[in-house]
Image (cartoon, rainbow, N blue to C red; front, top):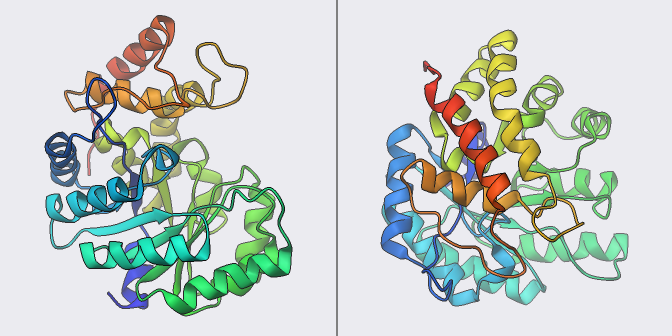
Length: 309
């Protein structure tokens, strides 16, 4: 798919998909995953991001990552876009990107670097080399200050880069980056529904969703409201969804670190919606009974609402 087409296709809700594992969490349930994806497609999803953080990227093997991407391509329609996550060394990212391309993926999302020590100019070299070696679209994923504005602006100007996923809670920095950046790259709000309004106002033409795995109609209705400039309607939907996002940001059972609930909330929500969620893999832990009750309450309120598209 040509870069210009991909940039346009990122002006949408990007569904960062969760992976259903077997009860012992040892294997990927591909039939269940395919059924989940088919339901999302039928609900209106057209942009899918497997092997991201919601998909427990770091708990997967490379062979699992590739097979998960294959399932995404097979289970979604020809008009769907599949953008798969890859991280690590230049060699690992480019190797996975080649395998993803063979599987039918349209782009690779380069996961935020987790190196202990980073040199800013060398980080730019890292991304340049990946762009030079990859034959599908490239999405840059920013989660913290390590990817500086200067590096991000240089990368955003490259032909290979079709979108930037900006996942930092800093609207001021995002606004200035968009102001300084090229006009043709797509800027994606990477911190989901909770910040959809301010990021949209400052130039984000798409956003990612995790809770869309089990409330797709609600998040697609939010996007439609934003796209139409119906900000009061968008606020109403955002207020309905925000308690789920707040719960995802909580540490979770036996934990003092932030966002331990992030993926477990999604997977438990899938079960409530009749989809396959299943267990999480270490280093994550399932929700506490109290957190499960909160998800149930949120889901009941959302399920009772009416969303028109």
